[in-house]
Image 1 (cartoon, rainbow, N blue to C red):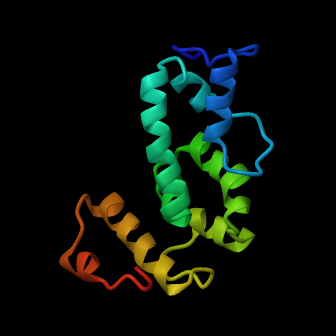
Image 2 (image 1 turned 90 degrees about the vertical axis):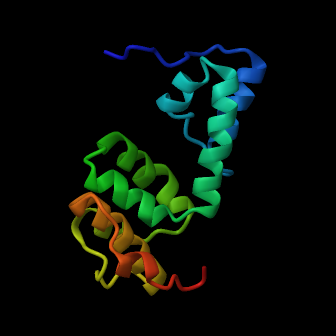
Length: 140
């Protein structure tokens, strides 16, 4: 049972608009429960949305998916798999590789290999090696 219940409709018009803004353009699914919980505190939610939008629009979704998969965050990985991965063009092979492959998986282009290696290393060793830190990031 959730300690803080997600907001349930009907909501005030400004809350409905804020919830819609959490979802990527063109996505028709209902706003996620996480967003409905955050919206209890409108100021915090507005600040978090900027961060979330930046990560999704300018971040690297395969790296985010890898973090959620490696940490066993089923809810978060499922959200990325169902909603965000198709929206950014992640292939089914790449999505599967977030769970079962490593950074050398053939589904990944070189720039994603560097990111996934950087995600895996601290998960496995609690540190980032000098080599991982210095690895060139293609296109970045």
